[in-house]
Length: 77
Image 1 (tube, rainbow, N blue to C red):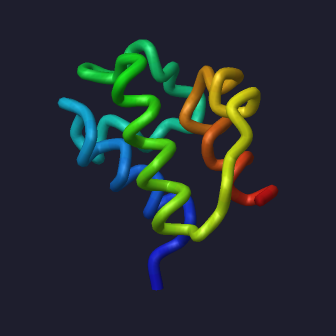
Image 2 (image 1 turned 120 degrees about the vertical axis):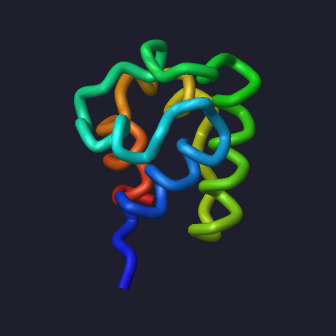
């Protein structure tokens, strides 16, 4: 069974130039992931909301700085 974290990492990898193996550190800054820009943030958010059947507030999305921030927000929702 895939964990929430693994699903999130897969979504990020699928929407960026980053490799899944490069995304394993929860402290990895989103700005340091190749191809992660403002459009990618929207695409990743929409994919997460669809996959997890949740809504993430814009203020939460805007506060994401690291992969760990995304994982925490999804676990809270």
